[in-house]
Length: 329
Image (cartoon, rainbow, N blue to C red; front, side, top):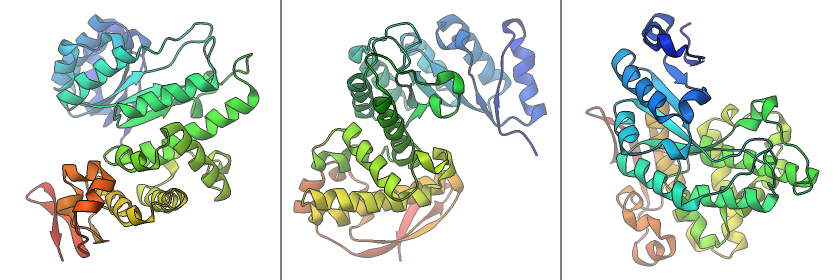
């Protein structure tokens, strides 16, 4: 079978040969896990130019420090099929400063250019980190509409969290479970198009939402302790969790009247994500018309519910003329 994902240590003097070998080796996806490129704009620009010329059909996942992102790098990224992971974490023994202005500016640059991006985060690894700081990073990151948030600590023993005077063992467990819940519900669940819209009526920060979801997962034996990784859950499996959990949270806040709307948003966006990701067509039973659900009106659920009439319908999500589409059945 051809290799679908790979990690490489490049010889900087022989990038051309390495990139040319991708087709020969059957590399379809490539993760550039090399710190020399993540923090060196010149080296990264050289790689991006050569990748576009020598291996343009590969899907690239590229971690970068926020500081290297500028209009030149973003323009080069637009020539590739890629996803950018902006590093929002510190290094052991060093302090990390969350420069919100910097990250906001870089996220806006990527969003405006249509570049898929997420954040790389960790917890209890750098000097002075605390559970308060972790919550702040998570809440802030999700406010920037990332496609995903990755926590490498689930995959590498070298990224292990360390107990400290500011991060207790109990804090570490809380952060771990909340990070896992975020990875499942948000990243693997492809929730970015609707997450902030359905969160807003609950009037709680994302970190609280995901810590509650972590508890919900524990009760259902589908959390971190289950031994599964976030990518072990299918999107369809996660969608069921998303709807059940949202029903519970909305009921807690006496927002039952918004449950049909929130459920429809999850379903219709999930169907389009599976069409794009797995090539899977779907037939949906909805409470509202997808014309309304997929409009800007869905950004404000209470206002939507007040002004848009329910319109029960059955819809097919499919490919038409090579493009995602839907039709009423």
